[in-house]
Amino acid sequence: MRRRSPTSSLPDHMEKGAVKNQQSRLCLLASLSAFFWFLLFYFHFVFLGGSTVDDSLQLKSISINTESINTPPTSSRPSNAQALPINSSMTTSRPTSTAQPGNAQSPPINRPMANIDRKSDNYPFMRALRTIENKSDPCGGRYIYVHDLPPRFNEDMLKECRSLSLWTNMCKFTSNAGLGPPLENVEGIFGAYNISMRDAASLDLVNWLAKRPEWSIMGGKDHFLVAGRITWDFRRLSDEESDWGNKLLFLPEAKNMSMLVVESSPWNANDFGIPYPTYFHPAKDADVFVWQDRMRKLERKWLFSFAGAPRPGNLKSIRGQIIDQCKNSKVGKLLECDFGESKCHSPSSIMQMFQSSHFCLQPQGDSYTRRSAFDSMLAGCIPVFFHPGSAYTQYTWHLPRNYSKYSVFIPEDDIRKRNVSIEQRLSQISPEQVKIMREEVISLIPRLIYADPRSKLETLKDAFDVAVQAVIDKVTKLRRDIIEGHTDEKFH
Ligand SMILES: *[C@@H]1O[C@H](CO)[C@@H](O)[C@H](O)[C@H]1NC(C)=O
Ligand SMILES: *[C@@H]1O[C@H](CO)[C@@H](O)[C@H](O)[C@H]1NC(C)=O
Ligand SMILES: *[C@@H]1O[C@H](CO)[C@@H](O)[C@H](O)[C@H]1NC(C)=O
Ligand SMILES: *[C@@H]1O[C@H](CO)[C@@H](O)[C@H](O)[C@H]1NC(C)=O
Ligand SMILES: *[C@@H]1O[C@H](CO)[C@@H](O)[C@H](O)[C@H]1NC(C)=O
Ligand SMILES: *[C@@H]1O[C@H](CO)[C@@H](O)[C@H](O)[C@H]1NC(C)=O
Image 1 (cartoon, rainbow, N blue to C red):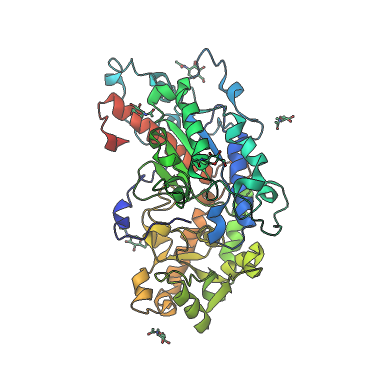
Image 2 (cartoon, rainbow, N blue to C red):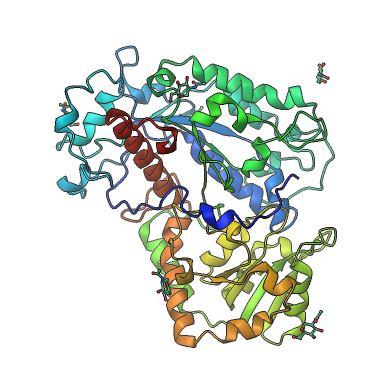
């Protein structure tokens, strides 16, 4: 597994992908492909059945789908819905009766268009952009086109589930089983194959995409792509065989697209962090409210807890100290994830521990982020981060900019060099403050979860809604910048 060494430059990137609170509803004309949803569930099962609770997760599924925003329907494509790839029956079309007329035209960037109409008639995306101003269309400005990708980019990959991962037979995760068979040592597309094999699908995909008429409208800059992995899997640094992953995100076409991944790169502007899927996939608002209420009322007997394994091979890792502190504290609880089976692999023991803790420790592992951070927030447990790359610079679309509201930050060096007591640090926070923070965490739950795609939440926005809206806003802003002449790369 490749990872970059932490650097102090991370906090400078906190602004990447500014948070936008978009109130209006998402309307997806052709809606999103079933495969996209499947992807999310696919991650879910992957993570659920992962061989350790947190860190081996990233080594698993690979699946990709791409979408482009607001491509206007053309005569060659009578209806977007017909262009949907696998099956659109699982997707949600969300024109809404409750959307206020005003909402439909108020994506965050509200600049007058009238004065630029004349000179901008030539842009191929004008038709899409103008739908924002159509007051009788509640979906105006939020149409999404889903490419009908050849099956070799999605379905076939799933059929090859046995060989996708070097360590694990993925097939079980695409079934409903959820419990894992023993590891199998088969060849995998991220590590074992030679680099030309590993890059083949990426090159094939971008070549295919770049030939689509939809691509030419904005050179792919209105395209986004989702992958249930960390960004480093797609950013192989060299063509050395021993180097990890493929080089998808270094391809010129991919640099024009937005890539949504569970861990993004702080040094690149075109990938964006989205929450790891957790165990909870509600079908309606009420399910969420009931859950939130339960989390509010739980009795939490531990001040703090940690679920994870040490990193004895990594001298910079603070996990050893964190585990010691848990062991030596009367108010700390540890779920140690060693080799082989342990409670750590059981969703219920993890969630039970988080649900009985006020604070949940989230040190980095093999990469900056952990799925565990989202499990803990789902459990109403306030996350404690030790590196800004573990959440603050990652999930800027989904988490509040002011991280003190929902989390505690203890710099790694406080643990590593200054032997700071986590127990002491956390007990200094007053019970009232803890309660306020927990309420903030619980209020974030809806936007951090992925709802059951077979139904829809009536009013709540889930992680998917938030991500899609953020991409739409980004593309809309880019189009307006182009019209107004700000074609500078930094506006991208
Ligand atoms: C697509 O959905 C229809 C029902 O809406 C179903 O009958 C059909 O089997 C589905 N096809 C695939 C490939 O899943
Ligand atoms: C505005 O939206 C309505 C409803 O979707 C549609 O019937 C109408 O053609 C649109 N008007 C324009 C000018 O696109
Ligand atoms: C990579 O592996 C494939 C399949 O094993 C093989 O056909 C190809 O020649 C190899 N390429 C290089 C550059 O070694
Ligand atoms: C990327 O977008 C720019 C326009 O911003 C375009 O000129 C370029 O051709 C695009 N690259 C590819 C590979 O399509
Ligand atoms: C961030 O939130 C904390 C806790 O609610 C608050 O004390 C602080 O003033 C906030 N900072 C900013 C810049 O809003
Ligand atoms: C760190 O602090 C604990 C008590 O808080 C102490 O038992 C331990 O020896 C200290 N470790 C080091 C390396 O100073």
